[in-house]
Length: 152
Length: 258
Image: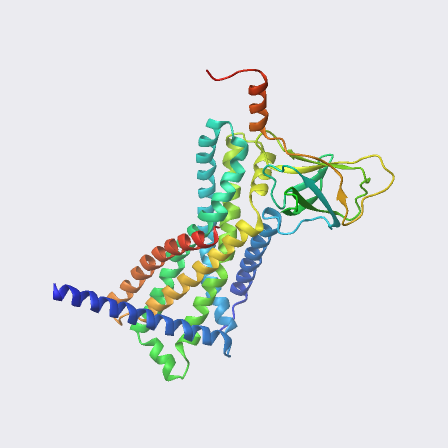
C-alpha cells in the first residue's frame, strides 16, 4: 500500500485531536481524578446528611480541599462519612464539619470549620463536632407548627 | 393457514441462517485482528476515509445541535428561573444520549454507506475474487481494516461532537441569551461525572462503532454482484445500522443506566 505523507499527517492530527477530546471530556469535564493529592483520611458522623453523595466536595472557607469517598451507616444507625483531604492540610483537632448546600437548590457539600486547638487531626481520626444537613421541608414544617396555624 | 405458517417458518430459518453467517463473518474478522500480517497502512487509510472525512459534518452538526439545545433549554428553564442549570441540561443530554447516537447515525450515513458501497462494487467487479486469486484473504485485506477503523474512530468523533456541541450551547446560551459564562461551565462540569456519564458515552460509541462496522462490511461483502445489489447493500446498511443503533442505545441505557 502506497504511503502518502499528507494523508498520514492528517490522520495523525485527527487521532491526536480525537484522543485529546476524549481526554478533556474524561478529566476536565468528567472529573476523572480528584486533582488534589489526597492522603488525609478523616471520618465524620452525622445524624442526617440530606442529599449528600459520594464525590461531593469538602471545603474549608469555600476552598475545595478534598472529597467525600464513602458514606455508610454505623452500628447506631448514623451516617458515617469518609473524607479524603489534601495531605498537607493542618486541621486543629477541635474542627467541625457541616453539611451545607451551595445556593438554594444547589448540590450538598461538607464545610469544615477549623477550631483553635494546637493539636492537629491525623489520618484515620474522627471529626468530633458535626452539624447536620438542614432540611428545608422540616424547617417549614416546624415554622408552620410553631406559629400555631392548624387545620380546621 | 398452513402456508402462512410455512412462510413464518421459512422466514425464521432464513433469519437464523443470516445471523449464523454474520457470526461466522465477525469471527473471521476477530481472527484476522489477532493474526499477522497486521495491515497498519490499510488501517491508516481507512481511518482517513471514516474519520477525517467525517470530521466536518460531525463538528458542524455538533455545534448546531448544541446551539438548539441551548435555545430550547433556555426557553424551558427560564420559566422556572433556572437558567443557571443550562450547562447541566446541555451537558447531560449530550454526553448521555445525543452525542453517541447522533455521531453514530451521522457516521452511518457518511461513512457506513460508502463502506458498504465500496465493498459491494468490489464484489460486483470481481475484485475480491482477484484478491483471492493472489491468495490474499479479502476479509484480512479489505474488511478487517474498515471494521476496526470504525470502532477506533467512533469514540473520537463522539468526543469531538460533544465538545463542539458544548461550544454551540455556550455561544447561544452565554453570548446570545446572557446566561453567565462561569455558571454555564460550572454547572456543566459539576453535572457530569466520569463514572456515570463519560464512561457511558465511550461505551456507547464503541458499541455503535462495532455495530456500524460489522453491518456495513457484512452487507457489502454479501451483496449480489449486480448494480441493484450495490444499491441494496448501501440502503440496507443505513436502515439496519440506524435501527440497530437506536435499539442498542435503549438496551445499554436500560442495563447500565447511562
